[in-house]
Length: 132
Image (cartoon, rainbow, N blue to C red; front, side, top):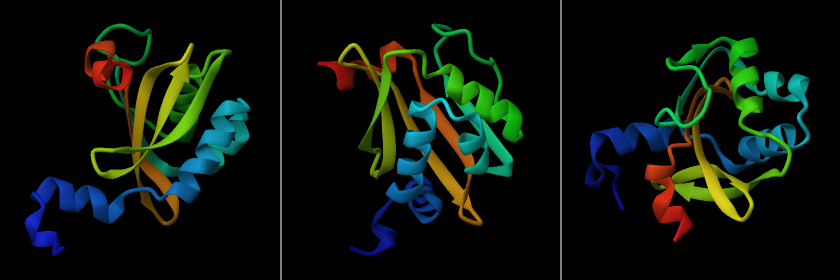
């Protein structure tokens, strides 16, 4: 199917969407709480946006830069949290799973084979469809 059949925002997301390979690497780094490995996957200009709906003590605004981005992502992985590959809005992504419930849905874009934009939805209201 031609890309012209998709809305513009979806075409942009598919073009730069992270592939399963880099997302698997991120999942392994997050699951093992390996700060160095997480940072190694992040572009120097990375931006992380976490939509918690006010339910988590995360940054209220997007965080930028490897150090802060890695720290924010690792805070989403307390003991007992795992990851699973998923298709999220038609692009490869990860779910964060705790106590058999999805507590986060992550998608990302790459530049120069590194994650440059990461979006994580942790708002339980928006995750209801994942936890039916």
